[in-house]
Image (cartoon, rainbow, N blue to C red; front, side, top):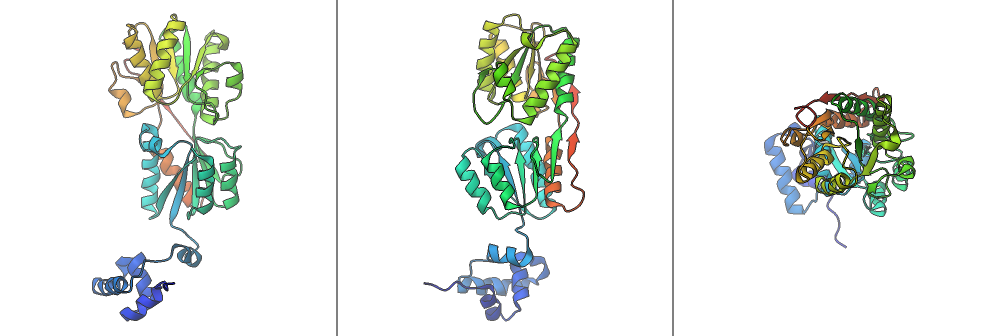
Length: 347
């Protein structure tokens, strides 16, 4: 078996200390250019593969990376507008602290558990994942700092969440003030058991995702205060894709032609609703008022522009990363939302 070339071998051959050779790879700004070039040339000649990650971890006690666990596939993480903004914020803080980011998809539970068990990271972030499952158990066994984003996880060092209840209540109050009287709520996925379509009482009682639970509660409380009974509200559970939401809203308008107010739990879903209403020959906001949730840039460009509850997803991600990587005050944070009124609710 070919013997692995070690850093000490490179240092000896280059005529420098092992510390200088280590800095050439890990902290190059501390080593003069001429010396770095000599070390790198010797390393290439000897076939040195670079610093051993596990050895560095044992030496420094740090991996220099942050793990981010997403409940969806990796394609979603890089295409969903809110996920993109969240990762921008995480990346911003990682860059500030000079650490890398590892993204783990929880779509396949077995693969995710293996990735969690083997991840060379200093801390984990978990986005929108409910507490009681095997992936969270695997994260706990790592005994590393764990921060939840938009979720409440027992034993996490902290969480960063929105005031979803108040945001949803603001949206419902706004539609009431705009004159809507017959409502539909377009919900995000209620729990890990994927099942899209009408939400009956049993399905609403099985909600495990914090975001859905809090937003439903906020919508219901405000609508009930306006004289609208929960049983009179149509609830539809949607995949967070505009095309899928559009198809569901087209059927909704056939089954419930009196609907004149739509509360969507995401702007992506709301944009799908706008498309369906237009194809049905109805007007927004004349026939139906629509309000989303998130404040993504695409909502400003719809026809009419989308009213929404705006959040700062970049700051949410940045703050979560700061809490996970820091050693100071790790208090959980509840971030505010604001009502942004555009043409989809008021002419």
